[in-house]
Image 1 (cartoon, rainbow, N blue to C red):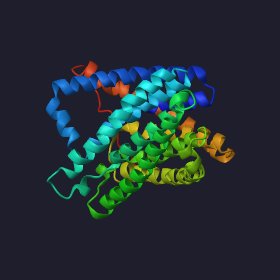
Image 2 (spheres, rainbow, N blue to C red):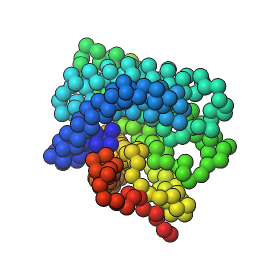
Image 3 (cartoon, one colour):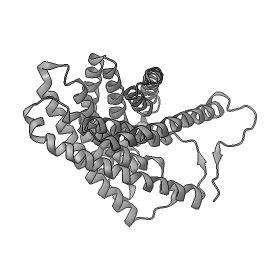
Length: 336
């Protein structure tokens, strides 16, 4: 998701070689993660089932939908529209299935109460998955003439579902923060997805506005165009809040800053915010929005490189040479 959206951003800024490199990383990561997930399902089935039924982790399975569509969108930009369509079908089926199964198995079907105490930033990934379907459908809509209206319906439906899911998830997560004990250890990187979900909502809205006239597009175009700007403004407002939350966690409360896989859930929102700003600015002729998106892209890319390098070091120390010389732990305690 992170490298895929950054590849899209670099393509928009005409850094074609860098975009191609990021696309290669994205494709490789997709294949590796898909293979590892399949292996884990076979070798550690009980652990997968436990994750699936745990409201703290169950919504993380929606990353399959989002990641598949992000890759599909980037392939569509490269002209591989058939691949985008295939990945959209795969992700769309998963989106429908997970959208009904995960909330039931992980939330409504649990006997332990209150479930609200388990709400966290990963719940926003459901929103990201919904909006990724809209972006992918809008990407191939101009190409597949026989099903343009159907793709328009799919894009607007999934966009609308995502908007309502964001409102519901935002309320639930806010209630969890206000009603239950909440320490710095629980303020994990996935809370950045709250901003990323808004950013992909903006991108999906901008793509829908550009779609050819169809009955549903004609009815909703002005509404979606206006809401896209509103959502961009709120996403912009959230960034200082999230930065301040990280300062409070690592500087004020001295939680060690170490590598964890969820750090990628910071890179994706940063990249998505950049792409959404660039695209919205160009689509709606908003130069200020485009300028902010372009600047953000050069915040997201170095952050991606840094996390990628730290990940490689972490893999070397924990997987490749776990019995080698004693090395200091890969963490830093930030002191004020």
